Length: 402
Image (cartoon, rainbow, N blue to C red; front, side, top):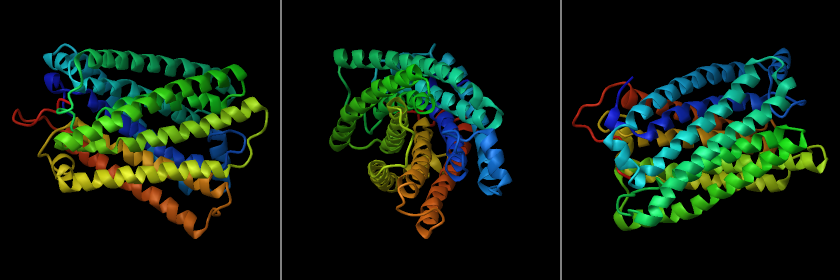
């Protein structure tokens, strides 16, 4: 593991931690969608034990084999990043970053911390017996935690936008969709607020969760609407920067977080309306299908670019180049896998479009597992080539000044 990067550090290294946390959640999807939990909106130790007693062992073993180790790696990389980040803030590289387009990379910090909170809930639910009996006390704490993360994100965004409005944006140095990292961060905060809205039966908790989800979700959508065309314009005029090619996939995790925010918020609205949650609606099928197809568009266009400009060969599967921006590739794979699980079970099965156990069901489920396997291979390659050795002085700086 590399240490004391100093001038060579970039906040985008937080994306390594983010990816492992996201993969832990992707393994959790096996429990969420393949084991019954009729009394709670998410699996608990008790519901998992009941499923095990009923013979549903495969998904449970597979889930636990990934949830715990990947989340522990997430925490280890988070601690490493915090240490390196504190050292980096004393360097000239930090001062250069906060005076350039690359200042947006600071939003990787609240983005990753948001994933940590989500992961703690997941790990707690599947390891702590009786946790659900205290859920109404834990959810306000989650609202407070996400409020603090949102405040940090607003602080970084406000400082960044203030500098851009006074000194301008360098389109020539952009070279990708890097600025969508801001939308990604606020989408993570929005989906975090939506979780208490979906799980609580206390009116105040639900209302606060919905308010936070809408507030930060609107910010995420506005930033996406602003920065996507800015990035496209920059690439069309000055070309795609090789080091920032992975940012072409940033739209994929954003779309997943938006879709899950919609699903969770719907549960909160049902609670406020006083009606029990009924079967899923065709409208949700349309939302999930649209989100999934939009992700495939980003995936295809990004893959074409990265397979032709040599990004995979130079930044992922070899040690030719160094760039923490390469870790941007992990989150899209995780997000695509997560949304596929939701599309399969909420979009298709609960609407009666295809039954669980049908050929189409297993085909879509296999697709989710293929994405998960490919993403794990990608993660292993990135850690080996980007984090497990010290860089030579002649190697490129971690992040292009975008």
